[in-house]
Length: 198
Image (cartoon, rainbow, N blue to C red):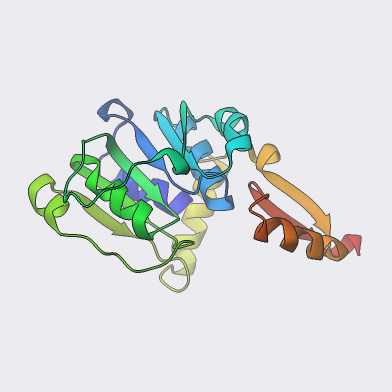
């Protein structure tokens, strides 16, 4: 989440340029991204498939919440320009729609693919609107110095405001129930396993 926000900021994206969209907003990365962007003054629109999570996302700082079930996707190569920037954790059709509806010279940070990793679309948004796709790789791309700098930012200017609202701590024995909740798409935020509590 912090790498995505940092990447958007590094492109020069400013809050006054317009709304920033976050897909998969109730997940761990999405929730934290909403919080981090809202804290920095961005107008955040969150997309979720969980209709009972709208209040949760507003508490984190989303100014608008959209249900992914209400989004009309079509085969047009371009859509109405709506977003100055975005963070996508979902991929596939939702990512295609997002790229097609990003404004001129907008940018989309890609960091996940819960719906899949294939991308079936034209390159027209990048050619005609200059939409940039920012790939975020945290697995091996960060040096230890990069990690330390990012953690320092998370402790200072990027420090989450609503971390307690988006983290639930459980003992190891609680994992089977959480797995069931994840399969049923009933989890918001992050679940932390307290190994000392076992």
